[in-house]
Length: 264
Image (cartoon, one colour):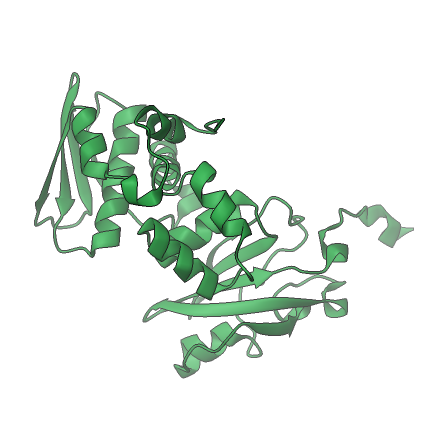
């Protein structure tokens, strides 16, 4: 028996949806009294206008297909959590400023991720990956028809592997996210190390290469980092943004420690 872990997953199970290709967002919207239309929008990715039990969602028709799906799922999140209100959303696939977004936007983002990549479908596939690299993320993104960024964030949040996901621009770290099993002491540095794959892609425009080992102090400003190695992978997601996926293989790095022992 499948047990839903969120409101979005309960909705999917109510509709008898058990595989990614069955997640028809427009059909789900229609069933919830939401009409979907695609038009040119300026300054936002999507707009929700609702009244009583009916609403109209307008999606920016210039966006790519996977962005449109996330936008629609995001607006359905607003419809489920914030009914009776209207929204204009710049949907960012959980990218810039996620931690400082208004609570309503974070709730809609979370709903969108869980609707598009429900745990009961996503986790079993994620655990079967040979390695948690961007090659694996691409496989998952193709299976669930989602963006690389949204899929990578979901992979980290599902906690199937001990991962840290970091986004950098040329001005430094933009945001990061870590799996629950990764201790908080592993905090990624603000500036990219010149020894990192991400640096080569962002500043030298070098092509992506396969994931490889790196010393942990390439990424973490931590007194013990030089003792360990991690697996790093990087992929450029725009002209001025690069995503890095850091896989912590060493169990010693995952142990919680008491810092008091260093001050005796």
